[in-house]
Amino acid sequence: MSWFFLLLGIVSEVLGTTSMKMSEGFTKLIPSILMFIFYGTSLILVTLALKEIEVSIAYSIWSGLGTAIIATIGILFFKEHFSLFKMLAILMIIVGVIMLNISGEAHEKAASPAYPQTERNGNCEQ
Image 1 (cartoon, one colour):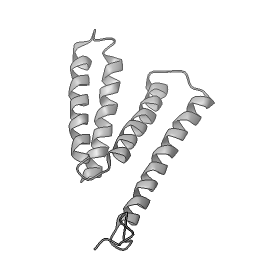
Image 2 (image 1 turned 90 degrees about the vertical axis):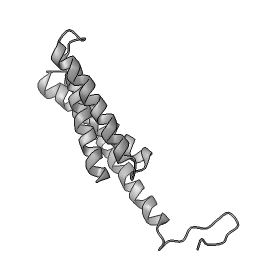
Image 3 (image 1 turned 180 degrees about the horizontal axis):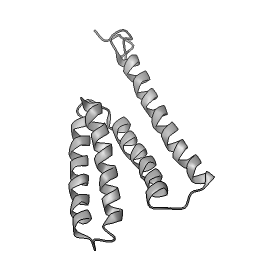
């Protein structure tokens, strides 16, 4: 369920950032209000996700994928400048998020009971 909360938190953050752009510096009321609603919802959802997901993994996925999605929305819908360099940067963000997720899975396997951890004095945990 935590991964679902994280996904919804990302979607909500993306909607909040899109609303921020559409508010035109708080000059449009509805997008300005939606921005606060979506950002608040995002923080609630990510907080719920943190009950079971490590903060380093959850935050990097939340911020990394949110950034990549917003950059793509900016290019596609707000006609922002597109370049090969920008596309490469977005791909690097996505690859970084995948690598962090994989490292989290590797850490979970190493910490599982099938792989006993040693204490500082060299004894295995029971």
